[in-house]
Length: 233
Image (tube, rainbow, N blue to C red):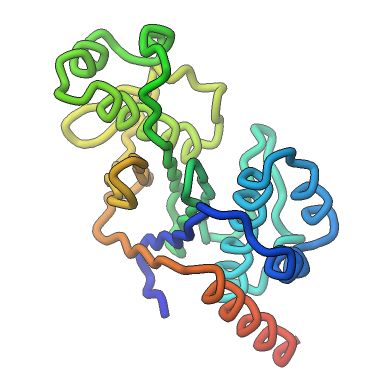
């Protein structure tokens, strides 16, 4: 179904699932993750968490012999499975994404929903002077700001140190992005006009495949890989 390129699975999270669908998806993940999913106060957060893990489970079952129980967190809290496959999850607003690559590279993805109610002046510390000037001169300041935000967040996730890297130290250049003299390569993804999204990788990005699933397709594919796993184990 998916070739050996950087692949992004995308699913919408616009409406609360019926109880039956929620419980069906919940059964695919280990008990600790079931409990964590149910700790979120709002349905959108609960679903985003669960959908992200279900997408990751689908990736793991299709491309490795690992499961969600094999995912562990390094010293900076970055999830990994200790193989050459890299993955990253992001969710915001109405979308949940899981990016993965079977090449030996680091990747990060970030999606945000544009919010024109925020005070941009509160975020000047995450942009360079040139980036801030670019935002202020843009036809749509909020779109340009969230473009920068998603790039910087994706880089921090790909690097693995997250918020330990000050976002103002992540600088854009003609080739992509640099952090402490390390070059990262970026790709803007067209998921939705109101949800800016960027993918970042440690190697040049030659091709990105985006596969959009709905909840029924997700359940179908999860059942399929679950049955295949049972047959081979």
